[in-house]
Image 1 (cartoon, rainbow, N blue to C red):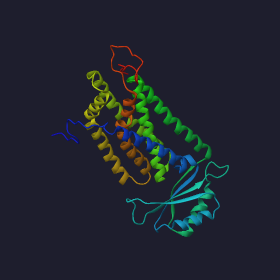
Image 2: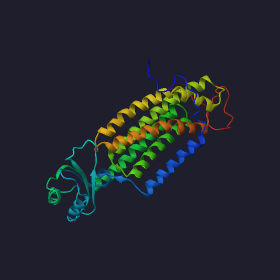
Image 3: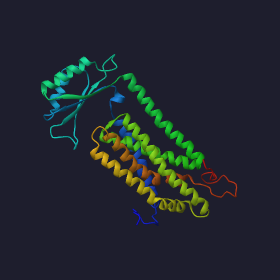
Image 4: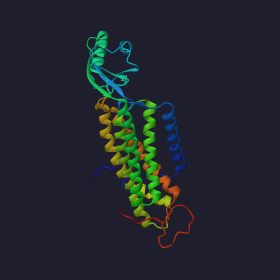
Amino acid sequence: MRLRLVPEQTNFDFFRFRKITMGFSIFAVIASLILWAVVGLNFGIDFRGGTTIRTEAVQPVDVGAYRDAMNALDLGEISVIQVFDPNFRDDQNVTLIRIQAQDGEEAVTSEIINRAEAALQAVDPTVVFTSVESVGPKVSGELIQAALLAIVAAMAAILIYIWLRFEWQFSVGAVAALFHDVILTIGIFSILQMRFDLSTIAAILTIVGYSINDTVVIFDRLRENLRKFKTTPLQDVMNTSVNETLSRTLMTSGTTLLALIALLIFGGDVIRGFVFAITWGVIVGTYSSVYVAKNVVLMLGVKRDWSKPSDGGGAGTQYANIDA
């Protein structure tokens, strides 16, 4: 007996409320962009420049006392955040202390680190520094440019690939879905003010790859059905294609989420932002493959009459028979 999350044959109408789902997606993207502009992101040390110190102590953390001790060193902007994790021992109290980049310095000197450690040990003698990470302002600026370039290049390459393999309407739908996934991921990080660093960029690129894989699987089935049902309305052919690939989509997403949720719970705070971003991306990527990519293709239209030349009317061009 094979495990099935859905029946072998389904007939769900995924486009019954397509105006509502498309409107919701547009609203979510706009809201995420506004949050990004107004609230901003909680950039990690990779993008802001400066030094992050991870401390551990046996005694409970007094964030106010830690902050006062660090401010007395006159190092500029200081951020003290207590880290909570269910995997920590009862006597393992962890904090992350962020120190802004010092003028003219690529990294905080060992002398400053020693002063900071002495100041915190005056508050709590059990404090120890478990890690110190420094990034200079010049390097952080270069990392931001490289991260943006990586995302744009990935989406441009995918647009060209889908255009060659399918048709331009499909490439527009696929890139619209990817843009939707990336912006919503940035939006959720802005709302929750989770740390946004290089690992988050890696997660976004992973989301792009995962989402386009799911979209291409459905597009491939749609192409087969467009050849098979040449007179059936496009919306009905799309519904058939999504229903035929629904079991595969849910099994792939479900098994991926099982592993991600386990990492989210037991993986610790160091990788939590990375895992959370991918978990969120799997959910919105599965949604966008149907309710964004397919809606865009449906709006643009696909001409399937190969025997007749295009009359210039309607949306779309002749459907390309290209295997790349």
